[in-house]
Amino acid sequence: MSRIFTTSFASVYPHYVTKVERKGRTKDELDEVIEWLTGFDDSALSAHLAAGTTFEDFFAEARLNPRASQITGVVCGVRVEEIDDPLMRNIRYLDKLVDELARGRSMDKVLRA
Image 1 (cartoon, one colour):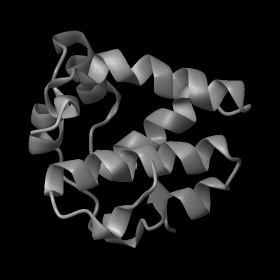
Image 2 (tube, one colour):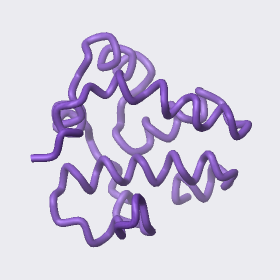
Image 3 (cartoon, rainbow, N blue to C red):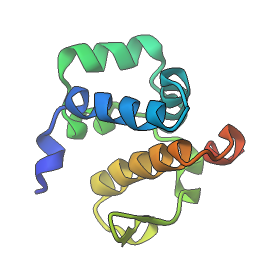
Image 4 (cartoon, rainbow, N blue to C red):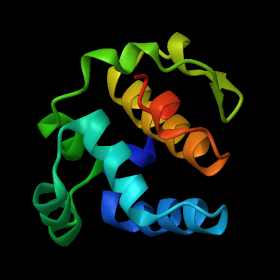
């Protein structure tokens, strides 16, 4: 079991915010990406952040977007689509979306519209 599974989402979220804001994107755009992937609206996301929900519990409660399987590419040297563990794949989906947002891709492309 990877250590990230038991890490709180709230401890990583500020790093996501910093990453996208440093590249000229906004926290609202990040939240939109998270909502697209997980189905969590602003209030649900805030509740998870306040509760210190682990990544494992965060994705256990998520309603993953049916188009999430269209997220492909490499994160941390590993192809997202080749990750066998469903939880790790979901975490890497989120990482990939955050990377794409920070790199300046349009929201339509990030959200697989």
